[in-house]
Length: 129
Ligand code: MN
Image 1: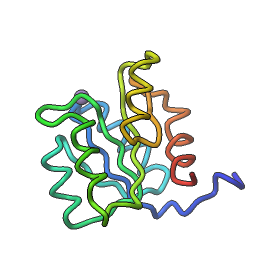
Image 2: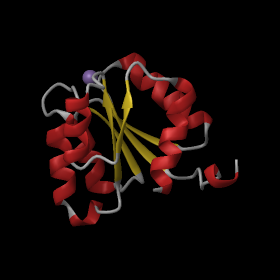
Image 3: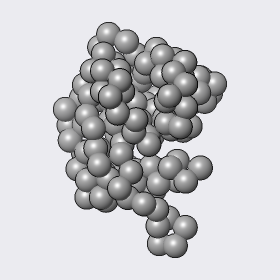
Image 4: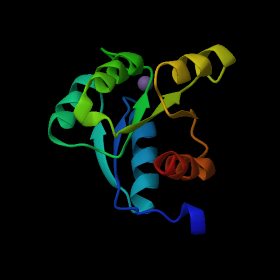
């Protein structure tokens, strides 16, 4: 473990509209000791963020209403959310899509369908970055 041995009491907000992906993400995070907050859309996520500051947001790009880019834009304007890391959930890992994600202020991305082995590794690496 060594360098991956971080404080697992960190809080992660998962924003995902697909129920199966949400369950998988939450199960993996909780199994690894993280505190998890859940939102099925941007409006719900922003309401949660009014009261709580998670360490990391896992943000689906394709959502009903605001998409992941719009939600991150709002988050990045909030000084009190400066410390929050953001990772995109994306179905597209084409070069252009990944570049757009990086340029939009995300700290990284996780491709869907999830690779369960690499999921937690990516989360921990992002929290340590
Ligand atoms: Mn989606």
